[in-house]
Image (cartoon, rainbow, N blue to C red; front, side):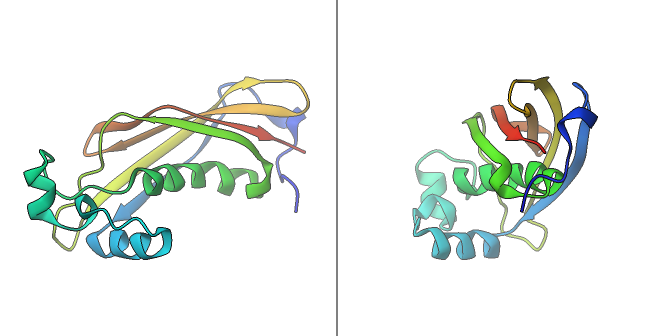
Length: 142
C-alpha cells in the first residue's frame, strides 16, 4: 500500500480532517494489557492522587498513537510515516464515569520538503488544554 495523497496536490496550510477520540477507564485497561504498561497511575485513582495527579491519566504513548491516526487516516498508509515525535505537555485525565475524556486532534501541512515529503503539524487537546506539544510527523506522499 502507498500513500493515497499526491505530493503535487498538497498545499502548505492544508488542513487534515480533525478527529475526536474517546478515552474511558476501560480503554486504559485494554491499552495496558496490549502494551504491558500496568503503571497504577493509569488505572488506580487512589494511587494517582497520592502521587499528585488529579485523577487517573491516559498513557502518554496511547495519546500519541491516537493523535497520529489523523495523519494515517488522511494519507491512507501508516507506512508513509517517515518520522513522528511529540512533547507531552499535560496528561489526559480520565474520570471514572461513562463519558471518560475526549482527545481532540487536528492537523495541517506545515511544510513541503524534498523527496515528496511533507511535515504535518498536529494539535491535540483534552478538556480544553493542549496535551501534546511539538507534535509533528514527516510523511512521504505519492
